[in-house]
Length: 280
Image (cartoon, rainbow, N blue to C red; front, side):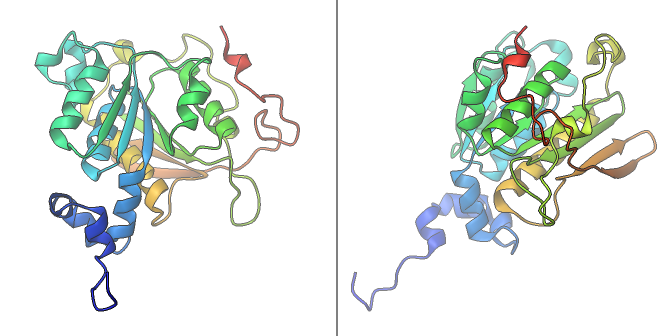
């Protein structure tokens, strides 16, 4: 290349013409633009669960152009899932959710690499999976998995977006306990917000209590937004803030929470230094 020959633009070098058109509405956003879209293309994200929360998360992350999506889920698609798990079709009933999710992502965006892990998140696989990605999104439906994935992310130094669903309500927050806030105080962990899981049997399951399907879509979309924010770094996220959504009264409120020096994971005298406490 001579000095008279203009160098190709970073956008042209990074994206194909089809990708430039596909992501055009991102590329014109000053907060995203070519650099941010390039970060999304290079990003690896782990989604725990391809169900009510994981489905809209995967939909919007794939549409956004996240380059590599890893999904762990050991379940099969059932007819009762389809009221809220929007990436699975009637024809997928009986198929593993990872297979159904892979087909959906491939149809939506062929530029995204999909890696399905048909298994449960366990002490044996959690740290390796978490450490292999840039961001983790927890869409699990039980407390044991939530505490396992949050502990694993804290130990591996990976940001975690975690959400939970109720009948007509949901919560979303982002955890970066491996970093410090502007004042030098460590960011909080999941255990700073919820020190202990509730006693077994006190919180009814989705099958027992029911859930409005669109609530999962709202929370999952917001979780995807936080995961995109974690990579592209725009605006003010939910680190240290719990977003609480009540669709019965259509209220969105945030609860601020901070680092607890007595928390067992990143406190002044940590007692959790590995995942052995999660062994059953």
